[in-house]
Image 1 (spheres, rainbow, N blue to C red):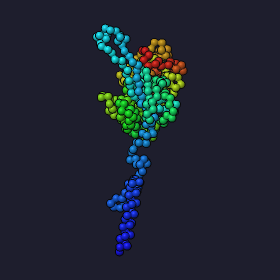
Image 2 (cartoon, rainbow, N blue to C red):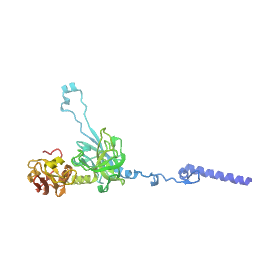
Image 3 (cartoon, rainbow, N blue to C red):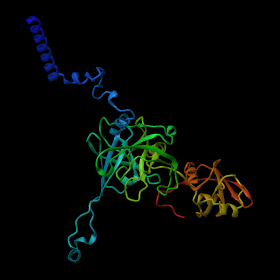
Image 4 (cartoon, rainbow, N blue to C red):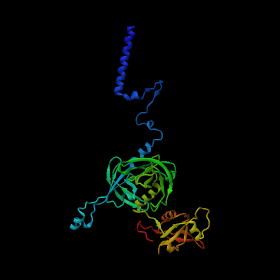
Length: 385
């Protein structure tokens, strides 16, 4: 009997020694083999494995896209009023401190060469632009070109081993798809928010000249401008650009420029330093039932008749030269139907300057075809009626 007790005590001592060694040197072995009260083994995934991510986690696309999203700091040169050194000005107004306005936004690295897409309003009028990467590196940025009509700008930095985002296919995006907005809101640091695509093709918002926005309820706040809107694969679908807000903060309605538009603008800026668009020199207005009746348009079966009424024509402009008059209704441009002012602007912008195109116009006596040679659209701010 004593021998059995001696063997038992020796085994207990050995097991306790083994348990102590394991608990000290490899405690995770014990955690990964915990037993419940009913004897069933509970398996725990190793830290960092895919099994440790909860169902529905968006960490994978966030991890893939975030390194390519940068913060953009801008500043303007110090400025003082010209009369600030005048003794009488100082006497009445005191010493003036130099002003050095600064701005904050976001951007997305889209090429290994260091090209960055952002919003034009983020870098507009800036004298110095600094880009801060997610890994902490900083670099001065050069402006390759800007396009105020779409509120896009292309920058370039010179750094090695840059993370580059994958460009998505906008035709694959649908209303209801989950998306992530990545940027630097309020300057707090890189932030990821999630939501869905609320609508596609939003226009006539009065934000840009050419509008075709992705609408999302992913939180977009000041500082997110120029940041990335990505899908669940981490692919870039849009450049965050604006919010609808009465308070200055997110109210669940944000807008992003589709990647298809951003790519076209980027290609033009790289090739020409500017975006070249067609222009015909007219003042258009959306059709209404009253206007349709006054111009005796045929019924189309739509809630509103098709076409855009021309209320003004620039003297000696392309439209005037082709014979377009105030009161004409443009119904087609280069064979494409026109339903509203936004479509007219987009279709005319797509015309090649100097290359003749057909314009279908409705007048009181019926539809006529005019041959028009578009000019290059003037830079924003230089258009005149």
